[in-house]
Length: 421
Image 1 (cartoon, one colour):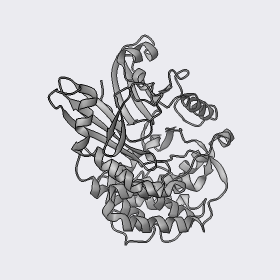
Image 2 (cartoon, one colour; image 1 turned 45 degrees about the horizontal axis):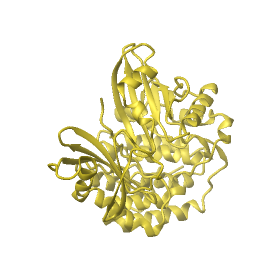
Image 3 (tube, helix red, strand yellow; image 1 turned 90 degrees about the vertical axis):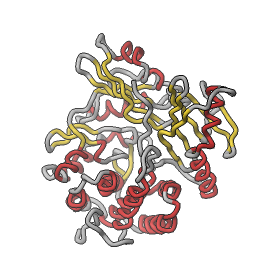
């Protein structure tokens, strides 16, 4: 009922400097027509008319490799994944091919080798039988898909229910279910699991409300209190401290800088300068104490009913961390909203209002530097192989980070750090 969609997202993971150029060449190869014959031969065999191959999305994870999703149109249409990442020999349903850029691993959607539950979550009959509760499935749509990592599928039923199916790597679904239950038991408004995970798929009830992003677009969230978002973090239960800790944005900055360079190679000098400024700044500012954190705290993961927070989404990264990193994540995403959509004309004013409140509870200079780091981490996420103009969006995000660090003058559509905090 739906095609796989790879969302624009910042690359995650570590990177080794010697791999940068290798991965940039791999990324260019996957985006070129040179990979098309390999795809055709792998899935259609030799001696058949060449199919039409269209790249739908690309993902780059510095230090791990690059992955492309392709639509292949021949006698029938299929979607194919191709990656330069290492995939264990035990993975089922994959093909392997040698290319000028090394070994490629290929699979036909939805047989993602590291997301075995994707087949269950994208099959209408299986979804109806597993989660329908006697109702008929009326829609099944891919919300997001990060090949080899995770996927989210929405399922609508004739009784009016909508649930979200989160497809995770083997063994991770029970951990995520436990996070949701921990928050619900602490009266934190998180989506409620629909039973236990099945085949590495966790079904979640739909959260109530609309995205905070809609409020930012409408009027800069004028009726929303910034302090409420600090209080929501205060409400995270102490049990979060027992979960595994994960690196924050600044901890993975070299990887994000490499990903940004792969997207904007002509801006390498600017990106490296920004990286150096951030790394120097985080070493001399106060990060504060370790506390329960969300780990991916920004407008897309917050639902609102009126001016009140009604749901906290995407709690995969919940764990011990630093409050300043959660707040920087929020502000960094808010800063780049005008680069995402020109209709976010109120974002600069909203940024000023939220930054003043957030800075009251943490080291303001640490917050400023880490907010710029988040802005840099979002540069590569502008890449869109299906449409033009994304380079301008990526450059806009880069300029947002530069303005926050004072490396370039501010402009009307670029939020700047409040002068007095």
